[in-house]
Length: 154
Image (cartoon, rainbow, N blue to C red; front, side):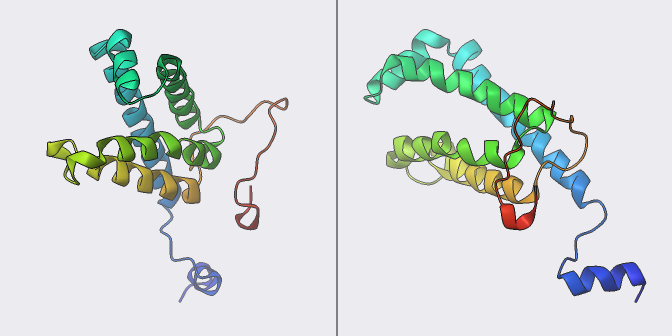
């Protein structure tokens, strides 16, 4: 057993050296999902259809605009590696709302069910626990540091 391996085993971590790259890849994949989701609402369906969908769900039309704006912020933060644990957790209500809205369609995704939003939400939680990985910008000094899991570090 090498000294490095012994140190990992004593701390309880058996992560591969490439784990940080894996966290980064997952972060970029999630950003891609948010971008595609945003594009469907804005570019493919269009905002009038998105507003109409929100209204049919009993939600105000302005919430559609907040939703798409928030999705841009989520994608940008994921791409840049800013506030990744926090942004992954605060975006969960959007995914949970979609689970509630589409619950009547059953579980399976091809039938319009909640399979994808559940998986997506779980992956967001995993990303929050992993952190941003590598290839991220250094936040400017004027942005506050927000520890999400103080026991796990910044």
